[in-house]
Length: 174
Image 1 (cartoon, helix red, strand yellow):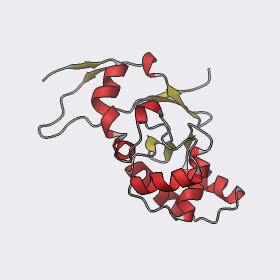
Image 2: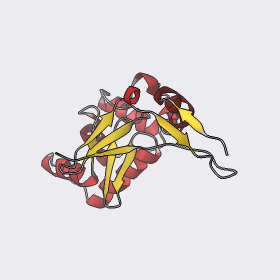
Image 3: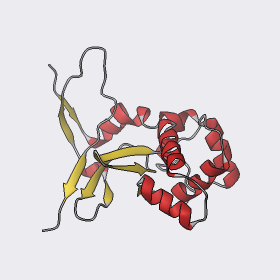
């Protein structure tokens, strides 16, 4: 069995770089230039981007895109997005929130970060990176890839390949 040693930059290029950003790349976006693929787009550009990503640009998807991507890079739960939508007077159900987040993730517009079985965040930064998770506050933060090495990756079973590596470093106050 081979042992693998990846520096953060080679991990980004060789494992997760192409796979996690596949949807955004297929939509014509150079993701290397922009980690949050839909940040700073006009409403018309969002509509076109959703279409190129294979998603129908419904009013609700466009409105949720404004909430998700209008604030730059962020990590958000479905519940928090629903709360923001209610405050913005966007009529949307929790089922629509979940469906939209999962469709955006499948299209490569978001990255799902499962902290534990009950807590999932959606990250607008689709580049390969890892996270700090603060157990006491529930906040999640990006880890600079220059600060992280992944060493000793096991050989996957025959016929499979490593798709992505997610590392969550859990923090507590001392």
